[in-house]
Length: 162
Ligand SMILES: [Zn+2]
Image (cartoon, rainbow, N blue to C red):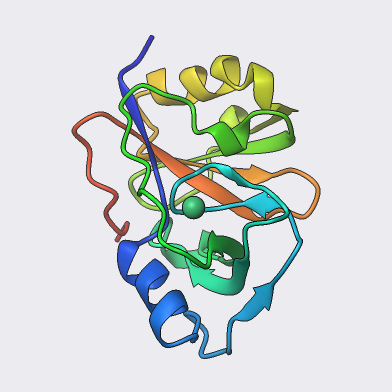
């Protein structure tokens, strides 16, 4: 098994969503009550009694032609930033996910891309991480296509690609 780290969205974005209510695209974030959803900071599923904030996030990687923003939820209240090494983020489990691998130039590695049940993500994820071309893997929801989290090899930085 490769050593890896699931990486939440940028801490500065989480703070701005909560403190100023402005997302990465300049939109006012939307407060959602009684909407269960995946928090991109603690990487846990919020229950319907936990208020969420919905905003747009500028992904740090890949840059270039494959760059995209993504709608994301975060808990409206403080939650612990996910930092467990070699652990699949809880929000990946229990939903259909899209595993997207990118190289150091920010190009999509189509042959490593896969849609799978999040409960069986290890196969596609580890295949991507074991491939020397892979710089970063982004795991998205497969149906709406929203970013769940990035995954990098342990010790690698979540840097912008050239
Ligand atoms: Zn959270």
